Image (cartoon, rainbow, N blue to C red; front, top):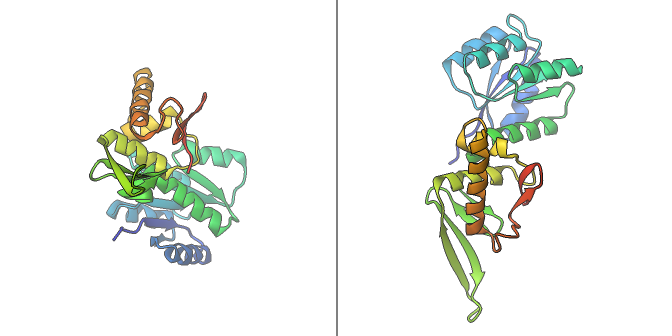
Length: 240
């Protein structure tokens, strides 16, 4: 059974905090609450979370101070800022100090849910698609490092499965594209998320080489790719 993503809600208004908790628990997230910045700081020191919803205006320690401290200390947990402030400078400030996304009150719960899922997909594609998933007409098995494509036999009409072996890096690339369908992914983003390194000139060539090799395995015609497409000047895109 897949483990639920654990979210910390840091919000001083009880009605909002309760509404968020009820909504997210309904959508199968595990929730912990904190009513002020000090409680949030103590809670984060004791346990790990998959994501933090952080109100900017908090008693005792502000959301801005918390985010700054956590990022300074090397905490990588994704943070979505919640605030009543709508000015552009507050949004820029939140992103500059390390927030992964920003949403202004009042907001719809459905929009918040979509943003949470988007951030979790970027941070942990394995959680989004799992270890086995469909990728175009392929069945991908990450643990086994294998891909299967089912085709009808020309003579008998029966289903025939072609098995393709992939490397761990190719599996990670497929998993990331599968978690981010219909979105252009730059070489920089792909390299950062899959190789977990900052892009360099060598990284650009490495990314292109891996995509070319992967296409040779999964595309029916690697010269005219239809699964992982090139978006000129922008990167790559998997259309689901």
